[in-house]
Image 1 (cartoon, rainbow, N blue to C red):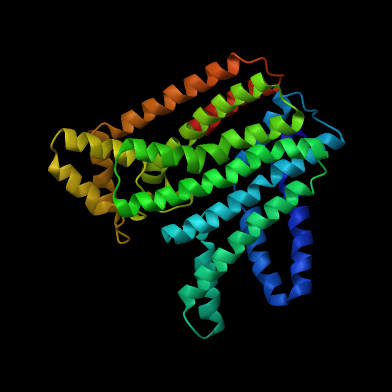
Image 2 (cartoon, rainbow, N blue to C red):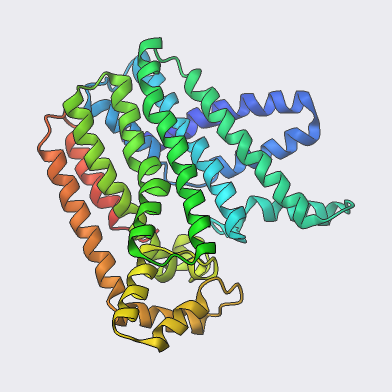
Length: 358
């Protein structure tokens, strides 16, 4: 099972979504078609990072690799991909993104459906409404999948602690992100807090704790996984921030500099802005403020922004944060008495998710 974990997650998601799509078709063919779009969004892409960390949290706390308990755990871990789908659909809508994984975002897809079908009313509004509803549906189905995974009641009760915390934290981070943009809060502290809530919690930390809680982990193991997950989760997002400006569109599936067009106040941008203010570099500040949130930003201006971010030392500062966080996470991991092969696999994953190109 462990040699093909993403494939196993894909299978569990496919089984669950096929059943839900059948139910949707019984309600109405049009709703069934909408659910088919959501299913395609979930199944056609994604690295399955969250289920992977949940699985290795389970194994680190002594959970079995095979058997009925392992299968139930895999179903529970796979439910995290539905929370991820909700977050991505809504995030793309908030950011007004046009593409995701090289394809139209969900709200743009339904905007196209409206236009091609000759519906009355506003196509953009229809796309927005459809994305909100399908994102909500993914979140509701995540709960259904977790509760129907076949986990024993006492284990499910333990699992609900990180599950509930994760759902609240990611929405808190999303709200603070939106609020920070309208407030114009450019401090590294604010950007880091959003990073911790919006990304670290639901990408690594809480999935790890979810698996560990289901396995009945000791308080010491939970603490070690919490520290490891928190640090690696932030480092993961910091790498994402760098890729959002410097990544290859052919690899990331998003246009070059899309984070700049969306006006994201990332730690990368906050570090550069803080340094420019310290150096009284008004030219750099003007350029950064000019590119942030500009939907018409072209490749030439993106390249100018890259040069400024590099010159101000922001890229180096973020790379150092990633290195330091990865190091502290590995120390927390090595200081804990976690079961093998999970401890070794988590160390490998820590490097894989913080040193990547997509």
